[in-house]
Length: 378
Image 1 (cartoon, rainbow, N blue to C red):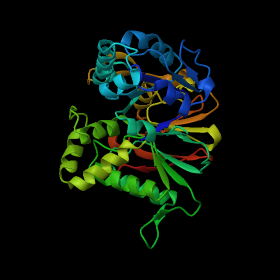
Image 2 (cartoon, rainbow, N blue to C red):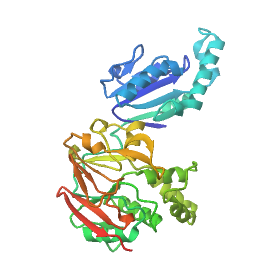
Image 3 (cartoon, one colour):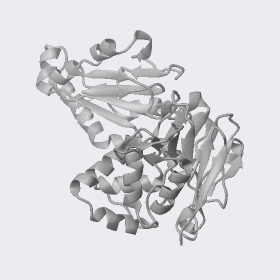
Image 4 (tube, helix red, strand yellow):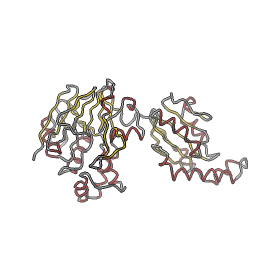
């Protein structure tokens, strides 16, 4: 089992007595990363909690502090057989106590999604315990080593013909083998909402997927894309706000291609950081303090932006303008909200120019900060 972790993560080790939590912690982590008796101050980039966290009440304070400090919350659960635990205990702990602790572990596994964890990894045998490989890596969002140049493309929403025209205008083409390329090694960055409302969402997904596979593009996940991902995963979703046509198109695909598109969407980040930290691509927006974090709260802000909890006449959340309060130097390119032209405010650039609403599909060129666009074909 590979467990991938990144900085700004708190790891809860959860298991019954004699499951080997401390052994696991000492084997895989540095001494200063491990806290067994008290909740840390969340000043380290990686925190491992090896205490008694068998009940929600005992986890609640550490979870609260982790949310406040924008740490990703991960649980590694040692769900080893009761017979093994009793052998390890050698009579030092009552069987009824160990059985109760095992029940607490199982209760957590049934309800962990209600507590705000970002991920849970389960080790269910001694063999798995010995074979676990912890991989400390950069966050999925961290592309600082890629300095571009980039073409940041606003919400496509199924407008395949306009996307093809814009790509040609930007200089992208295919070689004799059908592989995408750019003569100046530029890369396209799609700012989310590739699907819904337009005439060919599947065609857009196929094209963007191919561009990414040919290493000439990145794509962030938008709220419409995330909803389609949940649909492809078999989760219940409301088929509305232009999703009807996408569902019809998806229904014509083979099971294999549905799986390929699901995997493509599944591995997209909700934001990317480029060029040594000078540029961020995101769908709905991101606060300065959220950069380099990847918690549930951060992902939701990236997908939906800032709202006040109210619903407008069209049944959509009332959006707040997060750009007014942005004070950072990092350039943020985002989509989500359609404007007539690219909107500039406090080092933020709104690149969704409402192609699907008979306006333009736009691209912000970085580092030139120039705009290319094509008109919606009626």
